Length: 497
Ligand code: AHR
Image 1 (cartoon, rainbow, N blue to C red):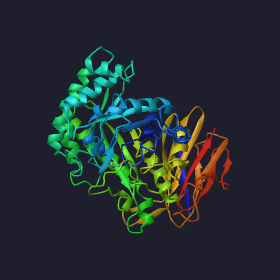
Image 2 (cartoon, rainbow, N blue to C red):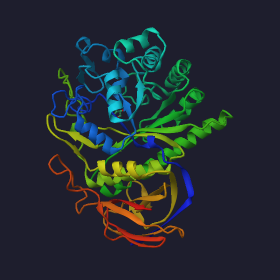
Image 3 (cartoon, rainbow, N blue to C red):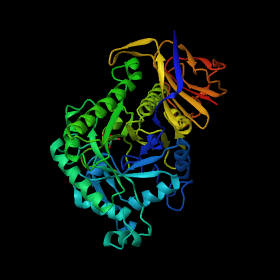
Image 4 (cartoon, rainbow, N blue to C red):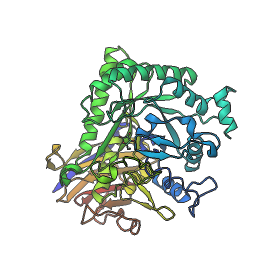
């Protein structure tokens, strides 16, 4: 089968935003404890942070990290996590039925963020708490004046404010599983008033209102409309969360998951624009896709402990990813980039151990899951402007998404380089693809493809360097025409200069 793509530097969508390549650290399972933080580990630094995880975080190329949750944040008292460690309380975390020793809190996270070279993105608790606690945390983080709570930060060793820019107004408040779950109307009012007060304290911040926890939520659409109607003036972005997994052995449908993300983004944008029209407003609300990934929610590892068992850092949500999962992750990144005009920020959920590209063995090595590779390569090589790609692809029938194009692609162009990211979503057939560069002659830097004869192959701590993106030997370049073959269920990056 064959396909053709036209890539023209004039077809720009918008800039490649570094914030597209964010990730997420939640107090959940082993993400923090034995993930980023493990005092006594052979690579741990003077603050207890694992250097091997820091090195992989840098290699992954993440820009922003959302913290501290997630469902966790809706029961969190941020004050528990600051001040002398010996005096911090052990608290029940109701979201994940775990014990939090609070050894890591805001100041530790900020220290880790500086070492990792990432931008922190904070979430406030609008579940059990409200405007006052959100203001106190903002004061602690961002205020240079000598007010009581800013002085507390100084006493805890941080003279300079952290000046955190992006703030999430709660987490997944549309979900009945959320502590303090609210109706759209209740949440919209609280988000609007909290946002208004937070802006009075620090007008430079960017605020994200909770959108829907997935496109399948019964309130999807109406939730966004109601929340944005109430909070229109005070927020910059609305969030979207999406997790995909193979259901009922239907790998072919699963490989088409990015179709759902495309529709999700477009429907949230349309809803926000409808609210703008009704408000007679020129303002544009962006989308913060602040949780996305593959997550096998029906597996036992996703179920928290029960009863009297309240463990510290239990094994939770430790999905082991396959090559097919990595192709889906690569495709979801293509979808996010293609919508760069509307998606202003995004976070792969999560960073370490919990549905994560980076895994750790306590006391042992840190290793890369399959999904690490498309993320790291896209984060490293997408630059300049995102280009819309004109695609003529064979069609692919799927049970879940109907008939979809077998191929998907996006391109970026910057610093004289053109980079094309492609996926072949067909499980059975390879596709020979021509890239028409519209008369612009290029040299080939590299063409890398991630695929495997067994798309269900999963990397492990012992062999995480066995199945990695490899040079695509089929690539031919003739002036302004590239030709290459994309194997079934594969992700590819073509770099041209
Ligand atoms: O990322 C795991 C969980 O997924 C988060 O805590 C929650 O926000 C979402 O449901």
